[in-house]
Amino acid sequence: MQEWYRSRALYDGGVMKLVKAHRFDEALELVEKIPDNKVKSMALNQIVVELVKAGEDYSGGALTRAVEAAMNVTGQDESTKTLMGLAFDLLELEKIEDALKIAEYISDLSNRAKVEAEVALKLAEKGEIARAMKIIENILDEDVKTWATSRLANKL
Picture 1 (tube, rainbow, N blue to C red):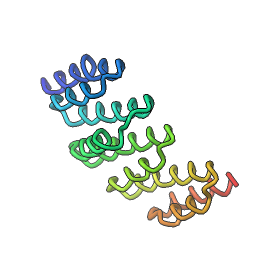
Picture 2 (cartoon, helix red, strand yellow):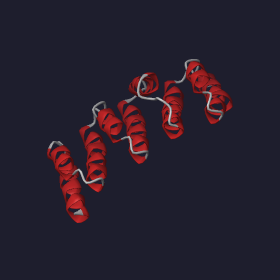
Picture 3 (cartoon, rainbow, N blue to C red):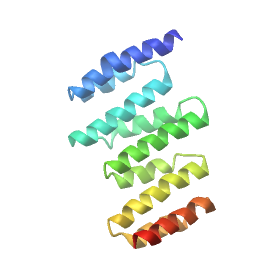
């Protein structure tokens, strides 16, 4: 329990203050001192999101570290939720390729399919219908594939 409190203190009192001040390099250093993997992953995800919003480079170290941290979160469900959260945040910020790449790390097929479907629908909104269809065709979860196909048809 002490580990979690120490982690939250570093997250709230350190990392997030540095991020809000756009002191991203310092935030990335401090995040390594967070002992709880879930809190560390949450912090790295937030750093990536704020780097994107600030127009800074995130695709190298920060994104890689965020994915690695998410994969180190205890329990597949927690890891999946963390990866999905990051993918959806990036998708919302128009970082479609990165969202699709993160989906590859989601081992739960149904949840991976949900990310892939949302990526495909975002591509369709941008006029990339053929690519959207190809992603949908490769979705392994049949229910999600059907849902995505229906949504795509409604967008046309």
